[in-house]
Length: 462
Image 1: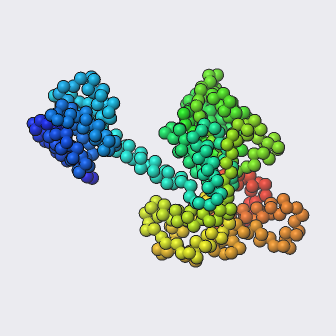
Image 2 (image 1 turned 120 degrees about the horizontal axis):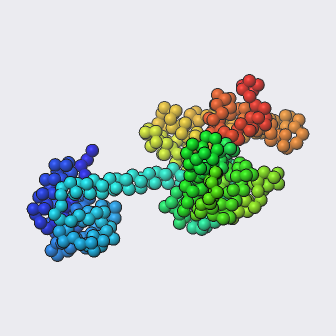
Image 3 (image 1 turned 30 degrees about the vertical axis):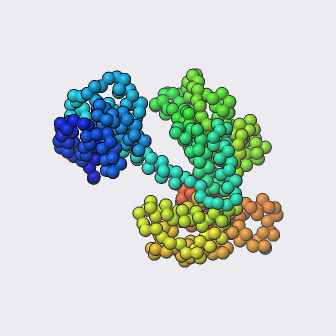
């Protein structure tokens, strides 16, 4: 591991020599400067990891040097040292960005503790910045189609406001990406983005998950729990699959939107929260309202800014760009050399009607990166369903004219096609429910409902 490089700017040679011995003994690399100007030159040329800076020096004093160092590189930690230390000097140095202030005469251990803290703090900031960039790359929206441009225009208008946003679209179209983009470009971007999948949490637990509970409020509540709305205070909460919430939970969410307060289970005390709500669903909530499954007043509260995300089949011009993006990112993640993809393979991927939308495309590309032995992904490497002109998303027409004619209504045809599709995907994935749900881009709970609705089982359909 490379040594941390420390630049010491002090006009007293005895101090510099003493610090050189201390720092080199502790494994640091020492660079010394006798004047402020010399220190600035070395800071630019040598790129130190930290600066130890004296305040009182002839010519340019330490406070001016500090200001110039901060302008040069605001992430460079500076520890200020002075034999003429006063509270006002320390306050001024801190205001101008110094990490710490040490008075002379100082003990070596005091200096070393300050340096270690400053270097650790910088490392954490650098790691945090790297992770944020990685998250942004992972969650960026890829494509230049007209449909996606409309979504991005809506995001740009919605992001700076505090208005609630309702994102609608099929499973796997990237509703979470839209929500994260809104948060990232909002005034709350420095605060938390808390995600809740309403379909993945059992009905008896979702209220506790969203609003929290007090110890002993119900059987199994052995500890107090802070709810997601409290965790998202001053930030954004993303309610994914909001159409799957129970009527009781819907009423409580409506209260949060109206009153800006939550009440933990088992507590009579209300807690004020400042939360921006973004919701998403793959259901038609207006139809759910007509069926009595969703509250109309909650719908109007959520849909202040509605955003409809188009399915991937309606923006095929984005597929090639998405594929190249996933090839690059998965190659890095799996520590393999980036693979080239032929035009024939790209054309086939572009023709396929991705029922699972971007999620299905993403999983397919990841599988190709891992399973293709050669440096080039070509047509024979693609799954049969993607390679065949009649495969995948086009299979709903596979019932044929004769079979279709036997089905009396459009609904019967759709249900028959959906059942065939689900059975085919379950067989492809060895009847693994979790894996199949992921591949087709639907919550596992929704897949279980479909299996029950169509009476699908491995014993009868395997």
